[in-house]
Length: 261
Image (cartoon, rainbow, N blue to C red; front, side, top):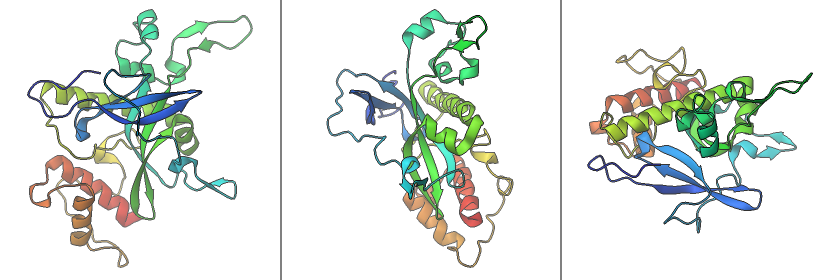
């Protein structure tokens, strides 16, 4: 991944955590400001160590069980906040038309190159690239974040999961490139989520308020709009007095999720 672009911000490469693959640990690296972060999985990165870094796959929410059943599933699955994957340079060199960009390595299996056509057998395609997904859950009216495996998203979102992971990765890289080019302001705020209907922040649920419209009144057992807004801004480290349009859209999405739980 590229280092910070001169004059575009104070952010640079950092270790997000580690994942265990067989007998080796790999780094999950992050680059760019929080609202425009790009992620990759690396065997190693010069100048960075996994010492003290969290194991992102340990005690993750998508793997928790009680009495043999998963605690959290489709009803708790909210949005993708980021996608980290391993860049296979050999595959990009061998199949340049299929992988013109690094993000194309995240394509669903049915879009990957065919590597064999055994007689009388099904077509054999390349393996899906190793990846982990930064995921947001909505549990008892509160957001929780964890890094999850591709298998977890397949469990909660079914056959559409791989396509949604790819679309979320494309969206992530678009924001990162916009930041690098100076067309998107870098902010030390949470990333705009990517939702399971395949869209970004503005069309997550049919009951969402129209852009610029008022926030609806919550049910009587919920926080008032003003109290909820203050808590949301505090949770996301946002100054309510200078909230941006992008942040307002994120807030509206979160409010609709909260009031409809």
